[in-house]
Image 1 (tube, rainbow, N blue to C red):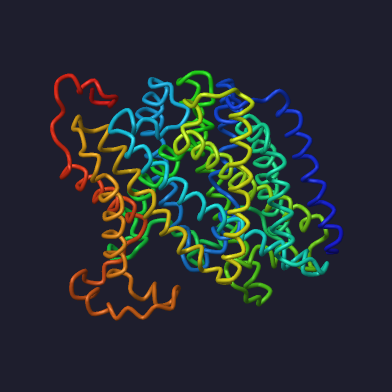
Image 2: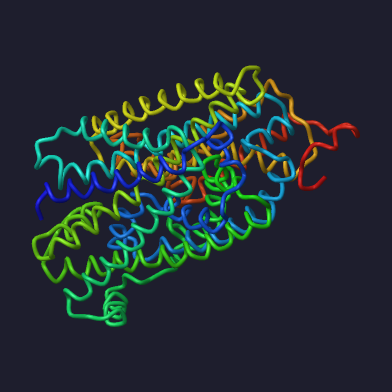
Length: 511
């Protein structure tokens, strides 16, 4: 398919986004940017959150992972359901009761300023690295199949895409993103379904025949019963639950949209409906991965997992329609995770680090500060994308998943300690615990998975004997975030004391 034609469709897609941003961003203010004036439609928020949760990494990597991991990823998805129930019935009521704009304000109300800053810092760090890694992965795909053929360098592609994202998020913020995410989620899901139908027809099969053949090849195995494996089903389900709690319920980007809804009941309906649809969508991505591998086997095609989907979708065997659909679906999957990330990081920095909402000054002065922060983070995003290109290793996505487990662990520990206990903390040691606990969790992970670091990071750690002797070959999987949160919780307990009677009014679920 002509790269020039694909380029025209990419630009047209951006023009539509900019038109939506202009319409929704009219007469916007800081409250519109941060929480959408608390007037968002819960159904739009729920639908748009699907795109934010999945991202371009899911679009490319989940189907590609079926070849080596079967449908084991679905174990994590089942865990998500449990985590979303905790968010709906524990965290949402808490956030609304306290009337929060930034969810990390809860930590200040409960423990003090240092806990507030620590929570905001770990969110910004995790979102900054995670979002730029996702952006790099998708830009790389677009670069290979479109922009390299047009003679456009990677750096210019990244710059233009970030400028366009900046343009349509600059004014409206959350108010705009709720609508653009809805548009983008629609594009992603339509692309997913169309690609499944076209590829199945290319193999002269129907849905049930493809599923039967996948099952015969072992791709559809969902539950891993090997207790030592990193994808053992209990690890994945429990780990998935805590990943959902931490990376959605304790994440300003995700909850910023939820608390922009009028009432807590509507916000709960949003979370529950979103979680159920997400199960179906993830199954479709896994099913797509299975038929991609069936197609590759039938054509004797050998390609890296992350390149499987784009290579087949943009191959000469298919008409130009599927190539266009794939590109639009891919960028639709990318932008909800990037535009939301840059907006939420801006919000978090303004509200939690700069305390913009409590500072004196006119609305115009505060808006000027917010715009400067927004632009500055766009520049940081650009630098980070170039850094990932310099590393030039698609396996870095595996590292990012571990990075998220490390950075969200302190958030999990802080919030759970605040909600489940009435104890107060010695503030001067909060940062120490929030740094030591992740390092300890990372150290245990290194000891359990020395070959992972040798293969992915090219670091010879010489820990294989330690791994076998102490841990018996046990591999840490998604439960890393739970281990990290547990260490943080224990450390916080060590620096805590019983609250005085008057302090027991601190906001917690127990009290």
